[in-house]
Length: 117
Image 1 (cartoon, rainbow, N blue to C red):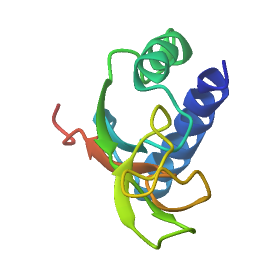
Image 2: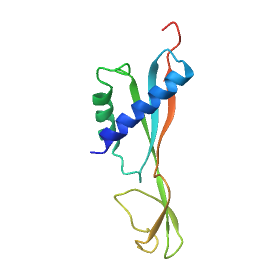
Image 3: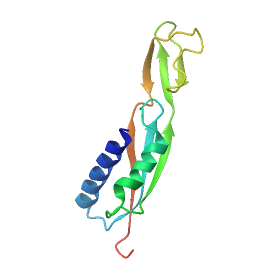
Image 4: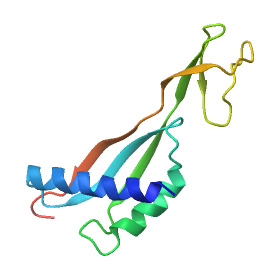
């Protein structure tokens, strides 16, 4: 389950940013997960809870937003929305595809606490 390593890397990145900015703490984190990234959102959510347990980020809410994957068929040039379950061109049935979007995992937002919270 590579989601555990991803959650750990996210915490380290968030911690570095929070310290750099001098924030008092974190209320929530929003990530965008591409449908073609290979990351399973529910696994990442479970791993997040485990990784932040006993840290300054325990209780920080993780918001996950899926990002649709798009691909281009190399046989007929059709561009279409897809995911890892349906990697076949809907127009010609081709399987030679070039991914165009939805491959990334991005920390989109870190909501920090105010000084008096």
